Length: 130
Image (cartoon, rainbow, N blue to C red; front, side, top):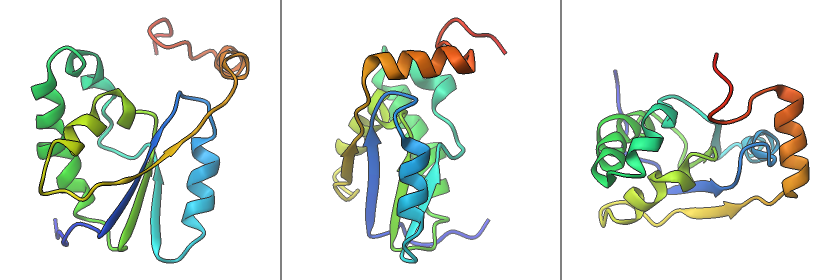
């Protein structure tokens, strides 16, 4: 697997799920100098709950899984649009002095709209098994 230096600039999101992340990915991805991905692998979902109780798990995920994947990006600006960053990964990133401070986009959608979207998709967090 060929790796490159990390991009110069990162864009992450703080959001709930169902708040426009896919739409933002399309917008940012329309700029040729931006590599924008929506919830790319490796996915933090499996580690998220335990990482919220044990910060070292988030740090290990960032070091062992996420940073190697990010080093594959060819663009100078990389946007990972996912609601996972605000659930433990962003804190691990910010505590690393060797990583650039990312730009953060806060996406806001009414709680009712988020809840209705989740119900329509039948993907209630912590309740839907699949």
